[in-house]
Image 1: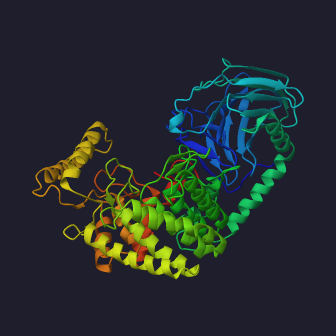
Image 2: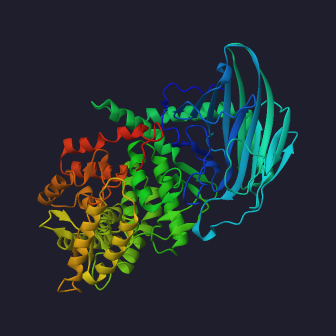
Image 3: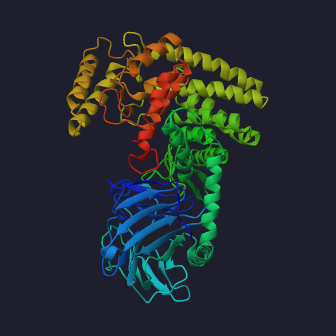
Length: 629
């Protein structure tokens, strides 16, 4: 199997950063130094390892060579299809570990190459540690889990491990070579110990390494919820067809690369564009019986989110990955309909076992409607539009306007994009996305010959936009507000934010600035002579640019906002801050939204300035992957 990739990206420092070996049915998450530390917070320490969603298979795997465990790699590389770790051992023995996940298969292939200047025997021990558990869901954690059980299958020269979940099974073995010894046990450990109630299995081999030649060992790990016979069929398929599977994946990735080209004068932007084609595909996950779609991110978010999907499919469309965009929104719609009683409400979060963890924030339903329209505009897929239209109508007219609005007010209540406790009243981003969704719903209705809905939605869009501008614009600040609330509603919220801020250790020294801003706001709320009068509150989260991102703001207001947010209060060296007050984090999503906002008003150079900070993130954590935060 030829696993070389000439256009990979590498690093030799900060190798404790995590990596992802991607596949649509299986993936590996570990540290770039080759280790498998306890990663993640959804299930503390359990989000790494080898996964075939919705099941985790292994905490990790390790190789002992001539009695020593090469734990720390000297170099890590990412290719479009593979990930690689380079080790140098005693006697100038070089070991290269390369991994890939075949398309459409719940398994991964791990290849070890051994090279040395002199001929020598090499004794190898491969150890894998199981932890068969289902994906995170809060109502199931902490999970009581029985001990995994292992048995050696002589006909396959592989270990089979069974978990306590019905059908949970994993097979671990080598391609084309029998082990000289094998053992298993819960107390059998390699160089690392991991959490959980798994079991370790070991396979030993003797390799006669010739001078200046390469010897190879390849392992297959596969599994899922389909039971022993299905897992064995998968194992035999990968063992016999792994070479062809890799070439097929390479050919598909070459097609993704060739689907479109970006030609600009900045080579770093062009390079990032090309890697984004693979980045998007890396995050695609398919679960039989549930669906297929782009997930939010490794390692804690490899499942589906309403807001993230609405943003992510726009990138898929621009990159030519139209089937992924359609499948993602179909999955979101179907799971939302099932979980939310046919209301049209779009979920916030759905794990890969189909559990809807959160029924949905207010902004996500109109945001989804906008995404549906964009998919139709790019693809011309009328069947997709037809099967989505009724859901979109229910979501906007019945749920958003019917259940989220109160007392004749057309600005909806509830959490928007900013996931800060207390920002649950009338938020700017929810209002903006409602306006845009009403416009797009009207356009859908015109295409599908529903003139009554088109007229109604056009009228409502104008009314909501007019109300939004009047309610949220702060002329003294030259900025849109984050939320509408009465002073009485704000007092308790602000006190909670102060308490949270006081409990956080700020690494950049802005805690005093944040507390000063909050205490000033608290005094204004406590001494307001009209405590029950609703008014706009400026918290300076990034969502204040959403009216501009949507192109809804009048030009004069847009210029004032953009001139303000382009300054150091909102933008730092790595992009736009999530908060113009605390400056703790910048993200790709809001920096990209700022670029879109600049382009909506013809400010091309300013938009390019936003984009030029993105390529820096390409190798910031995992080489070749744009980091979220």
